[in-house]
Amino acid sequence: MVVIRLQDGGLFIWSPIGLTKDLKDEIDALGPVRHIIAPNHLHDSFLTEWAQTYPEAKLHAAPSLAEKRSDLTFTSTLSNTAPANWQDEIEQCVVGGNSITTEVVFFHKASGTTLFTDLLQQFPKGWFKGWRALIARLDLMTEPTPSVPRKFRVAFRDKATACKALRKVLNWPTNAVVVAHGNPIATGGTAYLNRAFRWLKVS
Image (cartoon, rainbow, N blue to C red; front, side, top):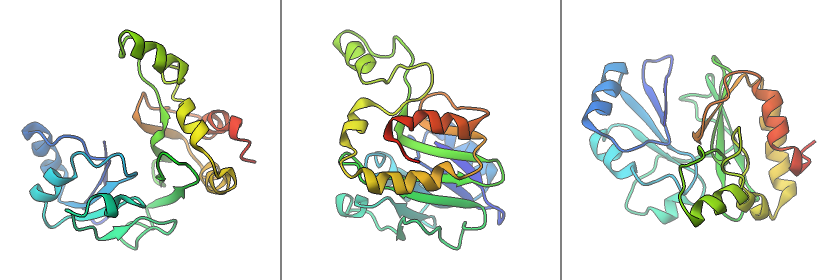
């Protein structure tokens, strides 16, 4: 999960995790929760508890999530155009063309940080046990730095659509990269992302 305090003091909650009492106390100390972001249709497990705890916050869904979660009321379906609430501070790009999920990638301008959800993943060796560890290694999920898992590489059926989106992402002046599953890349983010997606021949 990532928390961004917007210039108006409101909080932008990206890919929320389970809301424990300690986490809620920390969040409430930072400011009012205004926007809760589900960056792809796989990261929706904790949306209900966040929506119930912060009923005044706006829920924003990745493409196709609203159909999956008809029990929730979403303010918007995320697109390539950032809403007015954060367009001066955060850019976004819908990376489509993948049969597993369509992911919305974000770029926080002030910190030069790009946020990826599942298209880049990294788990420490030992995280998975037995045959799952073998599968994770073959899937490139235990690489030294976050990598595009093989299953996602194969799932890029519409490479033209994916490449068009990723060209936009690679043109952001990225310094750091934060992923939902893995260690952050603290510096040299643009060079790292070019290496991570070199196999797709984006340029």
